[in-house]
Length: 452
Image 1: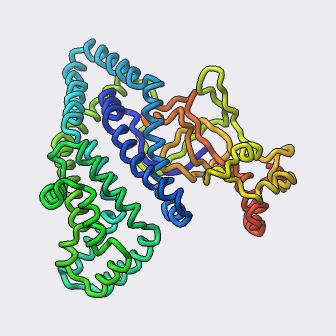
Image 2 (image 1 turned 135 degrees about the vertical axis):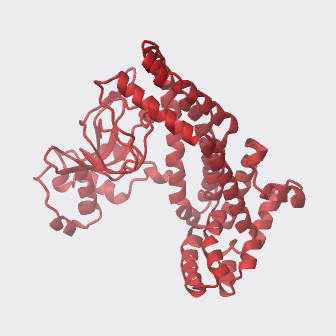
Image 3 (image 1 turned 60 degrees about the horizontal axis):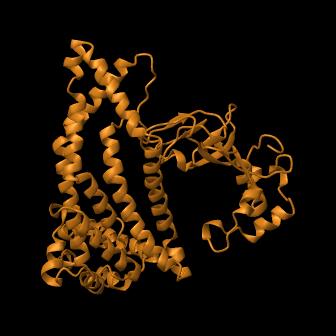
């Protein structure tokens, strides 16, 4: 059993929604995240300090970039579009067999098709990808947008001292993992992709400034931002906080650009809201019809970040012809993946020493150190860190990922292919006790049996 808080799934997504995901949403997400990752990686490879500073952000981007890539591959390879189309065709046939059904459900699929055609044409959903990756993904814009709270305080001239103290603390944290050169190049790239790939109606006012004042030269504009903005360096921002001015804040190029992009985001929301009510009604009606068509089938609602319990089995799987993955990995696999040139696969010397000496303590099974295992559980983003329990309610592992071949699982769960990847709790305890030398923590735990 796995108990946790899965983020969201979309198991009732139609064939029209899958087309939008494959043709617009995932490609734009992959493009934007890959562009940022390429810039970060180039700087991270040149400096240990930058590697540390951007490690978390890079890992975050890589995780979701990989999800979009693998999701598109899985949707295509597993013919999920065709399966959804077949279900919808069967639903249409079922409707036509009864006049009452025809009156109740006859227009629902056409309504959804029309809405998705409109979505594909207006590209508001896709534009949101670009806006969020620009405002949230460019550090100076993200931090500048957050100072709208300070702007409100300055406008009301109330509790200014407390707000200044608060933002001084925020600045300490922000500038610790910020580099002007990296951020400037990311801003240039995001603005270029935004300008080249989206319709003109989604361009915020900042692009008018780039055209009029900088001759459409985005690089010149970026240089202007990082040379004049109060957010460009910690020293400049601290100097501003010593004499905070609403007028100066509102004139700041990073502050203005961030708010202009958010204004474009609000535009996309107005566009979405124009058909949101019709979409929700049609979707609810479709689900009601599918349940009526299949009265004996158990339906369950999509994940929505509330607590869920999923049950399954420890099990291997076959992702392709002549390929099979065992249900368990061991310490040997860690050594086999050792790559000193890759931060993610560099095995510490201490771990190598323990393995060479077979010093696994009570955490081995028949002389073998278990590391990870596979299960058939139905999980998604948000479940990382969820406890994996056996039938007795004992903690046996921690869920942290899913197999790449089944990244379409948010839309379609496949019991034969989808696997949850969990770290064996025995390996966790081994790392705490033998590797990290924190065996005293074992005294605080009730461990069920030696060698288990």
